[in-house]
View 1 (tube, rainbow, N blue to C red):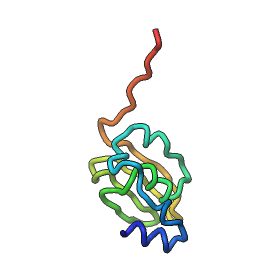
View 2: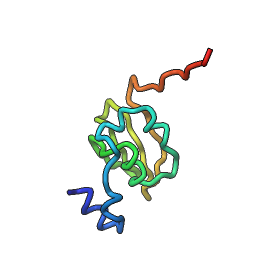
View 3: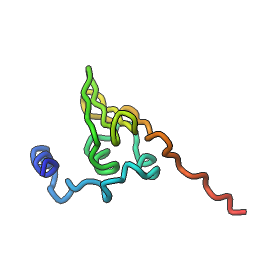
View 4: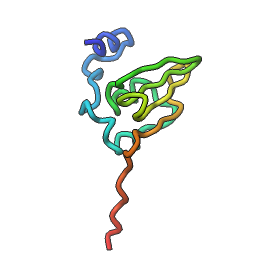
Length: 99
């Protein structure tokens, strides 16, 4: 419900306000690979899902997945993605060599 109301306030179509396809999308390395600097909060929400915790500091906001010991994404004062850190232990498996 909270997401639906926020979407309406931002002028986003409610159908587009659905979270990532899985509530645990943040646990998939492929989700983190889709992030790019400059993305909006909404873009990140669609990729990683709802954060476990949100913290605001002087001039930026941090989303934590699932908490401080996990992954995090940092936004600047206008809501653009600045940086991110994968949750510990979450690494993309090495690609198969095909040999």
